[in-house]
Amino acid sequence: MSMQKTYQFIKDAGYYFLATIDNDQPRVRPFGTIHIFEGKLYIQMGRKKNVAQQILANGQVELCALKGSEWIRVSGVLVDDKRREAKASMLDEYESLKSMYSADDDNTMVLYFQPGTVTATIWSFKNEPVVMKF
Image 1 (tube, rainbow, N blue to C red):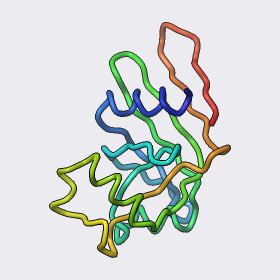
Image 2 (cartoon, one colour; image 1 turned 135 degrees about the vertical axis):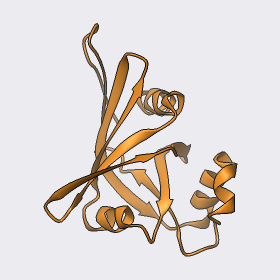
Image 3 (cartoon, rainbow, N blue to C red; image 1 turned 30 degrees about the vertical axis):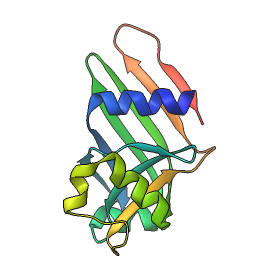
Image 4 (cartoon, helix red, strand yellow; image 1 turned 180 degrees about the vertical axis):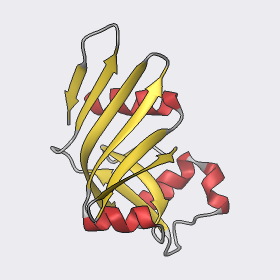
């Protein structure tokens, strides 16, 4: 249930900001993909991008999405899933990406949050934080 609630919050928000580490420097950029496949929470990016190389070097990330007066922070370890089925599932969810990516190309990269490493917290100025682990 925690993963589904996290997914729905991010999906409803429309986009999120993903933070990675580049050597000793933090890097943050916007993303819009979030997907559940085989019971895991996935994101997608281009394998050739700097962000992908940063994640391969250090999979510990945090993302943040804002929806109305609430925001969610999700921290965990991302794992590269090179299977065609995982890439195809993501691209089926985001048809617009098919003009740039393919399940069969060398650039499409999908990553899932490693189960057991994820903490998602929904924050607001009005309510106590809601902490979920999965």
